[in-house]
Amino acid sequence: MMRRIALLSPLLLLSGCATEQSIWNARGPGAARIAPLMWWIVVLFLVVTLIMWILLVIPIRRRGSLDEHAPIDIGGGQGWVALGGLLIPLAVLTAFFVAGLILMERFPIHDPNNSAVLKPDILVIGHQWWWEVHYLDGPPDQRFVTANEIHIPAGQAVTMELESEDVNHAFWVPTLQGKIDMIPGHPNFMRIEANQPGDYVGQCAEYCGVQHAHMRLLVVAQSAAAYKDWTEQMLQPGHTPTTPEAIAGEQVFLTGKCSTCHEVRGTPARGHVAPDLTHIGSRQYIGADSFPNNTAYLEAWVTHAQSFKPGCLMPNITDFNGVQLRDLVTYLQQLR
Ligand SMILES: [Cu+2]
Image (cartoon, rainbow, N blue to C red):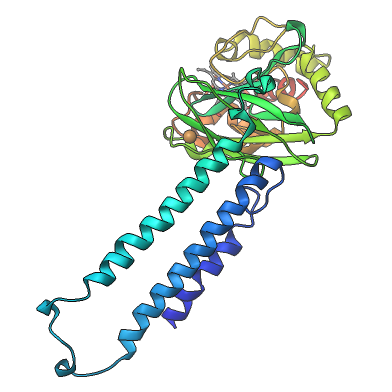
């Protein structure tokens, strides 16, 4: 029975991979280019595993007495060790190494004649444990900053520059493109494209500290018209509150600790060490795409960020009463 389960395990693993962050599910040309190599690796891995199981099972089934077996120290059989332990692994690993190098070289980012790739549309800066996103396309008055949720036009290649503010991170949206390290002081570039509009989940792919697992991101690919509307919305300063609750909430935000770390464009809140909140009300998730952006989670996050992401760089802030907290969250929600 155990053996049967063990034999089935590669199949279980395969079916377990059909989730949102899946390299099997290429949704853009970058990921589609990588997928065939991945299939080769998996198929070859399965073949090698199968052969090894057969080689294991044969001697197990060959029952006999000690008299029929030669002692282990009479020599011989080194040829098998050299073949199975050295030559085959060397050939397989070399083949995949070379295939990987060829694949890497063919990515347009390495084409020196392609001037578009040297001029990034979007600069993404990794922080412990969130993503700062600068839209650099167009003249200075068309540029803006946001965080954690990256919108791109569907069907168009977007060039990204990837950096880090602190430790090494890695930018990875498996359904769209391969992963690239984000290294402080050493910008890397990638071109990312989604075939169809939709949400594509990503994740930091280089261990970067306690909250690495909660350093998620969302790429939202939109039709050209919807993308244009979104950028126009993002260029606006933070929405001026109109209801009494939101007006009171803005005061809580500006007079409390929030503005020392966060920015809301168009207000005196100009902190730069935390995600830009100018349009926080329009984002789908909070805490770097880790928790839903709704009233319950926002209230809980604002007061107890350390319970959601222990060790993250936002402290628990519990110095407001219930009314102030509700007003504050109302203010955040109308920042759309
Ligand atoms: Cu990380």
